Image (cartoon, protein in one colour):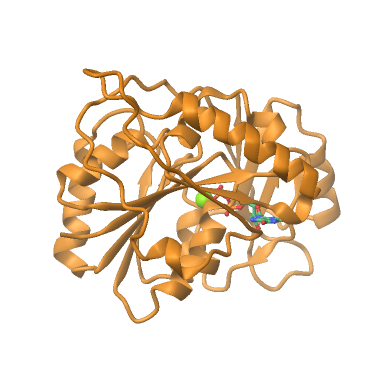
Length: 292
Ligand SMILES: Nc1nc2c(ncn2[C@@H]2O[C@H](COP(=O)(O)OP(=O)(O)O)[C@@H](O)[C@H]2O)c(=O)[nH]1
Ligand SMILES: [Mg+2]
């Protein structure tokens, strides 16, 4: 038996940040394996996570989202045999619904010790009507209202109410009885995914799930732009801020003029985050645009 935690949440809500900032600290001394399912052919999160964890497996989008995929199950088996981890963390793609993954894990004898859904309090109103986002909320038993540093307390209060309404409506349902499969949900508020240790200690373990409900198709597109020259930061920022409204996220790894190392750039809903340097990277330079 390999206990697993699933981290879900919309594009840019802070899943990778949580894994880097919080989960790692609470599992120090344990053998932790991470599977990250990227929206995009080229992994950005995998590179960030490899700075924090030694056992990171990247799966391109499509492998685990819309089907009980043999590929995901193969990856889990492989990671079990190779590393004998004591804990498995799965970061789902921001464009995917978590329920099929939960079922896959349970089928592999990996009891799911919590499905954490991050909510981006700064941008919730921009994506709240997205059907995948609703199923991500409904499919979780721990809700983390993240990026509280970017929202007023009253807004976070309102978002919490809305999210709990959505949770009630979008919980997975037993297809035979019509009963919701989850009866409880726990809410945390934080910034940069910093959570107390209890979240990772298996106190919110899921019941064994058997019936497979309907789940939606995800409706995001993506475009990869290769970048060959070092960029001027101000120019990059200006271009990102001028992207059309239907681009909801951009991320990538680029070289910047006057920066010694390549950087990870992150853009979501009109905001460009401070670039994060990555020291030992010698892969291609690119920006992935994700839109709906
Ligand atoms: N201001 C702020 N930024 C955050 C917070 N959490 C994450 N971020 C930033 O949001 C961006 C997307 O985070 P990431 O963890 O990559 O999101 P993911 O797509 O869900 O994995 C990154 O630039 C993070 O540094 C937060 O609580 N507050
Ligand atoms: Mg991520």
